[in-house]
Length: 612
Image (cartoon, rainbow, N blue to C red):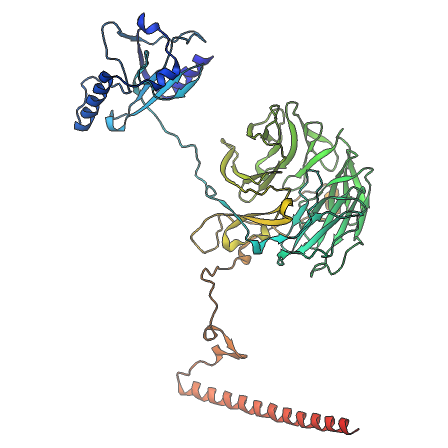
């Protein structure tokens, strides 16, 4: 098997001819690999290298078409004639000490030739120096075709930028729950964070434009009788948020535009249906009146918020549901379960359309990859390493590709941006965020970069695309929960661009705040994609110098429009300006006269009041 791999490697390098010296009895002596690598060159070897160096400098070339490179190559003798290369049998490589391969360019230019020595030891090919080796294989001609491992991508140089201290939210008592949820939700108006609370569950709702240190007595949403396990903002109404709790209920809250003035205990709607704690909630992506909830009773309930009742129940999971994800139009639901199975379900009928049995891995999270008809899962392999797998949503018999990430134990949270086709992987308990570009063709996942931080993250909230800072070319924004510092830190993913104009190539049409379906339409079997909007209207040209316009540059000064008081160019314009100014003066005099009379009357009234 080893020599088959070596042969494949040599064939992939377009090798034309291979020769090797015959072994003599003296060359059968085994020499330790460390001795081969570290033995100093003899005087004759140094002289040969010096002569070869001089020949290259003077531009002389050997008449022989076959050039040999490398330190310590033995001269050709009658005792070691070259013959055709014979590969030994599988595993019979005890007498092989090294491979010396010379690469030549198609033009046979010695200046462009490269030398790559290899060492065969314990059925491995190791790069290294081969001075003083006893056996060599000589490659006379090689044609190399270099293929870049990177694809041309506009997101190759995306970098992460952590918010300054003035942009962070400090003094937040973040929950210490051990459940693998995010405990954070954000939209363009509010930031919600699940907190520690005695006597029931609670979470904070902070206006997004008010960062800084939070008052310990800041009002909370504290209507649950058990710990809050998940919170999600409505994608269509920025003031509506849903929460699930250990008290087996799901509650809908309406937050005032100005934020909370006092503790909120009365919910807009209480949804009761789970027999055990409700662990997950998910809004339908295109219908504003449909909400999904998954509980520890192994059931998924579909709620019609227009009526406040559960209209469907999915009971095809024998164990606890760990994650739920919708495709773009909400016609398919992907779930990961504690029984190590990935399922794709028709949410209306509850029928399992596809199922993958991941016996050797534990699937923790799942996410649909937009319109690519792909599903990505994160989990743990049989070697206890974190890994990701890419699946075809129409065939879950085997993953398209798998990739191991690292050996850490925290859950990998996947986030997918359908507008840029970028995938973000953030690990719970570490401060790293890896991001990839996803494509429908090989390589399906192209690693771009990694954002590193020393502060470990407990969870992450994601800002919707309509809340991005378009003028800064911000394509994604996280809100990172740092429990050790009681801190919420924003992290922006930015595409570096020199131009200050609106970048349409990285900001395509995105989902807006209007739903495309009502609850009744979706329940009747209608599917529609999201209603798209452009972010160009939210674009504001940046002012890099931070300058403010002077009074002379403004349009109005003390209520007078400067554009209407331009110097006249003709006599008619001069007369018009004079008449207009006379009218203004007359009006001002009348106003002054009226105010004087008003003041006189008020003085008389005040005098009368004093006399009485």
